[in-house]
Image (tube, rainbow, N blue to C red):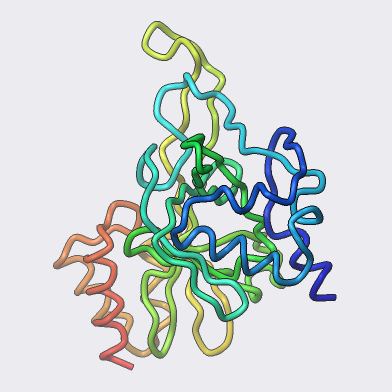
Length: 241
């Protein structure tokens, strides 16, 4: 079973020539530990079977499909209790793909798609992304959610971008949308979607009035609030519990 699970962890897009020395060409940083961890179980030839490289679509479109920026960000991946840090990552919000950048010994870059099902969680900068099985069980879809707050309850944000196939002089190759946000609250062992700012206070009875007053005073709107504002709001809610 362990062999079957680990076999799928690294997914490349495009064709690679499978050769046992390939993994030894990767530069000696934390990225190689991720490869080495997998090789412990099944060997490099199996790892590279049916391999593919990441091949992004619509690269000339206006804007980009990634979380935060169209640049590689320092981050970490958490797999089966192990942490792989100092990695260069991108998270594609259109496809849900988590991409790892590696370099071969000759300096050639290799962009690797990590299989979602086998990554427990990951971090880009200070932003932690986790899976939420309760959301999947409730029919809310799979994928990673950004954890904004965790305490007596937890608050999550899920972002999505889409490619817009409309063309103009300003965007002759189409464009990517701004991120669309969905918010979820895990409270009392239940996952609830928070549809708008008016819905949030209702989850914290009997403190609805106090929370509404706080949100109005601070002018907090879920979709436009900064992370710092959201955290302050959620800490305020936690203090009332």
